[in-house]
Length: 70
Image (cartoon, rainbow, N blue to C red; front, side, top):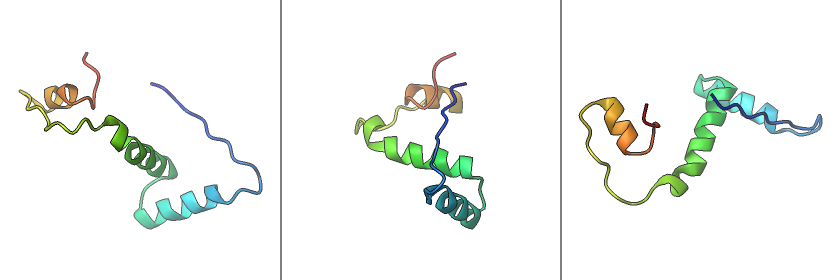
């Protein structure tokens, strides 16, 4: 599983804001960061075509680029 590390300087306030917002939403800071990345990639990943139906949930997610095939 890929892992990305983000480093902030001691004086930067964004980590404090991330933690506060995550607490407001009742999620972890890591979950909030994941959501923000997914939201930021939405335009890049959206080809404008309607989603393809699948035979199962996993097939649907693979056909629509959410999961890699096994």
